Length: 392
Ligand code: KG4
Ligand code: ZN
Image 1: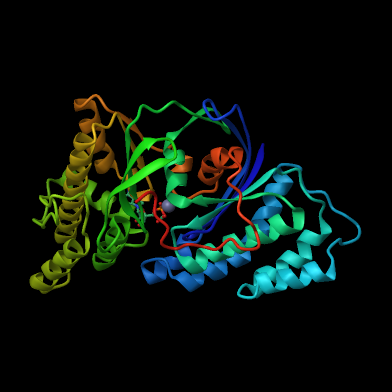
Image 2: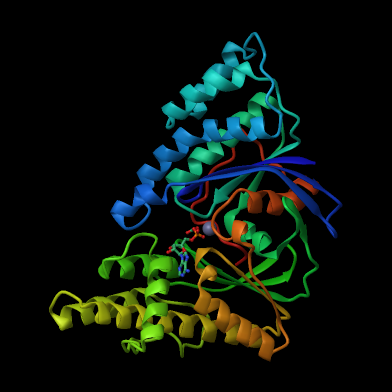
């Protein structure tokens, strides 16, 4: 089964073309093309992702990236006469009414190429920034209609879970090693902070989530307060490591909700505590103060996450922990999870570097079992769902 997957939920525009085989127990994937265009540099001036800019950039980039993916896979075959009826063209103009720039590129390119040998189109339909999601969803819908190819909507968080479960057998070749259930998924990114119980593959229960800011968002906002660039996570993490190396101790900060009975998180208060600390110092921060605050903030985040993961894992007797999303790349968080997993005979699964940040390959991986069980959606009616969750 050849899958074309599309991801536009945040600030990465991504397309992959993947050959999937081997059935659901031992799936095998060959990434024929896997292209990600990050907009992070453009959003840096805003200190976070600016939704209308993200939408515009996705609309600009999708046709060029698709062209590149089809070229790399030798699936691009020109035709001499465009083949698209006036009635169909009218329908597509209506479908693209909020993305005129994408529509223009679409009509200049798609009618002039032959239908490629693709069996399924998979697209992220949520959760994420709704204006950004819509661009990918509408692009996928239009391709599915013109080429008459089945369309599979994919939950971005399920994409991260599959992304974290994938192993690489050789360059471009991936498998999903068997998982011992129940598993606990820790999904932490710029938009999400969730603990999900995975009872078996595709069976989810939401155990806890953030009540305000996502943890990555808190990293980004605190980074801004410290005068660090976006994305803030890696910048804070680097400063915290410098602090440790220089013997600069952590600035004391609260650990919000660490003792609460539930598995929810809250990071807004921690962010505000940093803001008050900066105000109270009352002067331009010295480098040592920055180091102490970065280290103190990261310590607080790691403590809260490690404590919630431990509670969730023990209460549900999990055998595997699956960490996914950009923040799961944080060295301190990984170390804390590794220690906990080793102490409790739990297997920890973390993503390969190419599957850590948002990408389309993880969407293809997650779509395979959906496509195999024919979980197709009508391309005329598929909608983006910004607040989609995994399980309840
Ligand atoms: O999963 P991702 O690439 O995109 C989505 O938000 O879906 O995650 C990006 C987020 C940003 O907020 C970034 O600051 C954070 O992940 N991040 C980190 C690290 N690397 C990225 N946070 C903490 N430590 C890191 N090393
Ligand atoms: Zn993500």
